[in-house]
Amino acid sequence: MADDLRVAFIAGTLDRGGAEKQLLFHLRALRQAGTDLLVLSLTRGEHHEESIGRLGIPVRWVGTRRDPVRRAAAITRALRSFRPHVVQAAHFFANVYAAAGARHCGAVELGCLRSDGHFDVAAHGLQGWLLLHAPRALVANSDAARRAVAGLRLPVGRVHVLPNAVDLPAAAHPIERPDAAPLALAIGRLTAVKRYDRFLEALHAARQSLPALHGELVGDGPARADLEARARALGLLPAGVRFTGARDDINGHLARATMLVSCSDHEGVPNVVLEAMAAGVPVIATPAGECPALVRDGTTGLLVPFAPVSELARAMVRLAQDPALRQRLTEAARAFVGQTHGAERIAPRLLAIYDAEARAQHRPLAGAAVARLHKLVAPPTAGPAPVTV
Image (cartoon, rainbow, N blue to C red; front, side, top):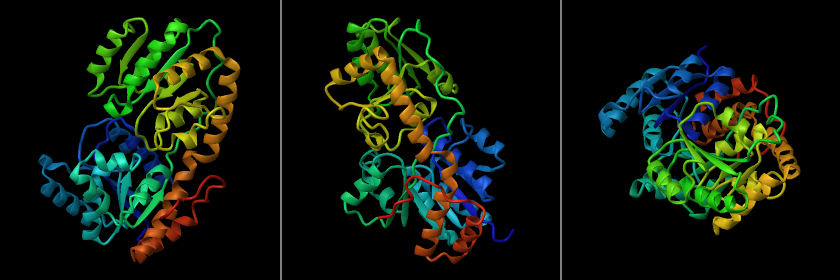
């Protein structure tokens, strides 16, 4: 139909990762709501490209020779052909392309914040300020990022909070086997900011009082060699910890885990924390990004300080030795995630953001298309609405 809402996403990568997984959730939700979609990717042949294709959504490669000028030209050509109402970045480093492309075709422009705001900017050096300022509005996945941007008093316009979502399994974590050795699990890309060195140090300390405890690091990345060397120096290899590399069967790993450990310095809303909570696996986390709002200490998980590492080790031993505590935490966490982060909430929240920005950016055609779709999608019955500052 002529008034169908058309949304183009610009993705920096379609590889394994939290931002890419949330992009897939967004595409699925908008597709089910009747939106016409296009994904423009700076990379090609990566993990999620096939999954997006199975949704019936075209993916076009616009990463021509890694040349920013040619990339921008390719994006502009694709957008002029598609005629989107909304152009949205799926990664922070794609913000400039989304802003420029949207302005060329007269669409609503939306940038992206995936971490805690400070890290997004700092990780890109001088370009970080350009990436933050380029779009007229930003979609962050955490209130921590919104607060950081507001606290910096940057004239970035509007910041909307769209929490990360998760599919809630029909059944929670299977009943634990009394004879199974306790397993501490960490999942993610092996990079310095994730601080898996902290996980290894805590695991080593915890095993001094609980030798049966062992660990698994699921993921790959540039820090893997250093982490393996550290594990070897701590005497954790080969029996104390296992490096699995990147895996698709995350649910299988969660099903065997006694606990999930998130020990980052910077986060937005960690997907793996939501997935563990939804699956009924108790979580230990550092207070990075939105973790304190998710992992409420003693209620939906255990929250530990960044330092000393002995606090993380103590929490690991405590969870491993207390099945009643694990049961109580997982029941509360699963109920919390179902109420606030269910995937069914994505479409109403995104449409509300599009509607607000269509008006703010004076794009009445987009506003009319969003209004039509609002009739098809019921708003969420609980949980926080998108926040604007």
